[in-house]
Image (cartoon, rainbow, N blue to C red):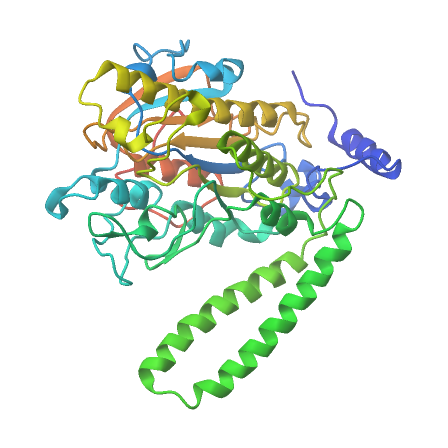
Length: 457
């Protein structure tokens, strides 16, 4: 079906807004016609129709039970196994991708620490440094490479989310820093970007604090306050710098660099129109039940994509190695403990239930995106690329080859769904580069252990 005439769609949206109807639609700055975009030249992170193109990486912990995850054989008519069965309604925009490896997450000379390596390598492709101290070292993650290149097109260069704790230091896994397990996004090899865990703070960051109708003014006040605080701190820091020795001066420079990044983000946000104000109550905070928490954070991500707040996001559902129980499923044992099942059928079935539970939340999110109409008449899911996966494949053996990876969405019509593809011993980093190319990434030949690009996604 051909999308409706874009100018007609824009006229109707203006009419709806004039009638006072709530809008959580892409901001008007992204609604220029595809004809105009073609005249202006290359535009990153857009589809051929001129709609925004979104990319999200959603991470689940501890791998998956292989026999319940993988379809029987590569096919163009996807038959979903038990773990993936909640995705039936979006199967036409779903690809199961086999044969993708992160060999830099394997033990090698570093020994134990597979959970830290699994998540630290997931979006960087590099072997992370084994340290529990402050001298962490990973790589720049693909989402942050894109944030640098296309982040200027939206109010936020990227968004980082989690339903877990936020940790940047301490020892978590066999001599590895917690930073590797609790962060997916890395702006530099030594600087992870902590994800937001509070749905209330995430919502207010997107739309402003307060009740519907008062949020735009609140957002403007917050920007003014942030700039005022930054100006004061930067001036004080400059005075202090003259009194410091070389070592302390270097530490201060690192701190100032972080402040300047915040300053640039504020300046970038000011170049874009204020967001629409969704007529819904601000989330109260973190729900007690994980299922409600997970659903709420996915709703926040859907709102962010719908309002074109950002086109790049990472969502760490739980930290790699998570050992939380699942009372909502009647499972009292910890997830990580159960994954070391030693072929015990009862433990395997409990892990499979947890795997399916995570997928059910993904399915709800994808169906939500599929129900939202984008500016070109297609759904937002059609104009998205959602990677769902884990840096561990078989949690019982801590393997990092043939990772459980799904790719949902049509990439604006550039990808075909309803199929299972097996790439056979191919670096996962090749997939990351291929998706980056579709987002308009330029000048990046390699990422981690990449050996090329994937064809025919």
